[in-house]
Image 1: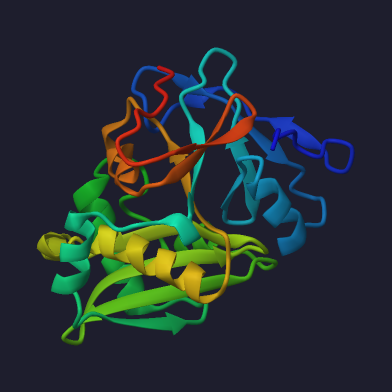
Image 2: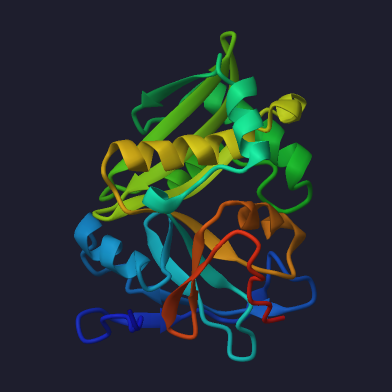
Amino acid sequence: MTAKPPQNQLTFFASRPHPCSYLPGRDTVNLFTDPGAPMDMAIYSRLADFGFRRSGSHIYRPRCPHCQACLPMRIPVSAFQPSRAQRRTLKANRAVQATLRSVAFDEEHFALYRRYMASRHPGSGMDDPDPERYLEFLSSPWSETLVVEFRLQGRLMAVSVLDVLGQGLSAVYTFFEPGLSAHSPGRHSVLWAIGEAQRRGLDALYLGYWIAASPKMRYKQEYRPLELLHEGQWRRFERGAVLPNHE
């Protein structure tokens, strides 16, 4: 499929250049839909296939003039086969309970989010959020969103926020207890989301962007097969295949 956003139906704007969160020393420009235009899950589902993401109520994708490093990524869940390490994670976390929660402010979730940000993203501007900004970041009034909490022996281990698209699930954000990293909570949440997409009969799990030069993104390459929106088309990469690197 050749990916061309439906520009005859939507108005798009470009942001001003601003520092890139993933590649130090570079600026980024985002293409985003008109914030005042009506939005719903049908439109967003279509835009997801052209590489767009949701942050709060805003729909965007990177459109940097001199950089093609950010490649939209999804996992075709019907073809997914867990690796040996992923099977070990599933086995080790058999006692972890996943519970679906409504999209609402939760003190316990927010406290975990703050600990996660302070540990993983100190000094980023996101490590001291207030409750309103936190909820605005994760939710929107028009999206169909799942909040999944993972508990290990009653202790909150991770929270994953997923949008339900027409064709798949889209990972909005996941945060977890830094002290439980030995249980691979990030990996476990992705594997759970793949399984949930399969249970719902959906095609894919959308995992944001693959950026080869960003250490923060390296974990994504372990989920195979995966598909990248590369040069206008979704291309599949089986286990062992080298992923594109556009620095």
